[in-house]
Length: 485
Image (cartoon, rainbow, N blue to C red):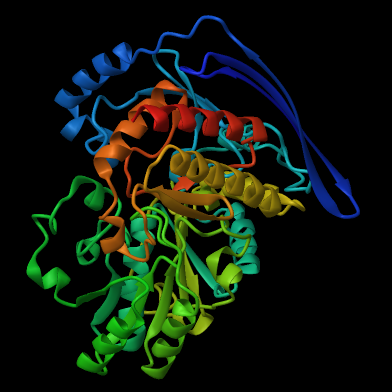
């Protein structure tokens, strides 16, 4: 693989060019970065005038001017950015500002945006080896069949081979849809009504999940959503993340009624929160003792912490798993899967009904196949771990040096930090973070050419397209902004 990226940090006044070269040595992948950085004498003017104009029009056309709440920048202030193009680790808005991107379309862009680098591992003989070229070739045959296509088999085999818990899989169109289906399946299989979720964990916007939810609900400070009837949430029980005694008490109080526990094995929708040692093991043991199912929502963590997801990383095998984002390579996708005996309850094999016209569409399957092939290359996760470690440690170091209360962490290509002393073990801890300071930091980083998630309560993501140069530019920007705020 060889990639060249050139760009200008919006506020750093730095023009950058870098090349990543990849080669195999003794069966391992080596990434070497050659960097040249020249400092421009004149700082680039930063303006969001065109974005502001576009957003003002959008507010008359769409609720809040957006199609997903967190995009509205409510918690960080100012106008949201309207983007024009993405490539590699960089994104450009309609005003011409370029940013190093740590949102990655909220996770899917793990190999970088608009991939045209290709895999060193053969994919399919009739398709090109890059995501963009393969999509172009697939589109010649059509964008949607509403019927089976061979590509579904290929991606299904890859997912089943990779994820320890999955023996059969059902593709859907979003993470929300996957979580809706998997909870219905758990209730059908156990003939029990109740589920346990954790405060600050987000499993999509289905009625039964909008109880102590994370993501946009946490960002906007919304109560349980209007329009959700009490009957839809009466069987949803909640506990603080990392609190095993609270879960034990729920099982005692609702003996024989709990169908499943669903959780993000690493929370990404309250900011980045890792499980305490033995927490996941204890949850796994409790579900077995009470004949309940364990569901890992790996929409974020799947194929990101390791090729087999969080369950491979931690060595904990749930009964059911939800996936999304990465397995569609940036196209709308979701999936749920698990043990064969459970999955065979799904229609038409069994009585639990779930359907979708666009499920398994050829474009999403193609992008997912090529993305997963790239992730199979030797050294992939070692590289993600290396650059993410450099990023988060660098931000924490300059933050503490500037006198701020700050804590954070990472696993693989997923990270987060909070403006609080910490530690942050759950959503209640996360809410102690100084969100006003985060908003100032966020706006400052935008002007320095760095795009982070516009909320203190969202995880960040790195990709194979990020270079050591990107990381160093980001840390330098953070140091500058943290000294100013």
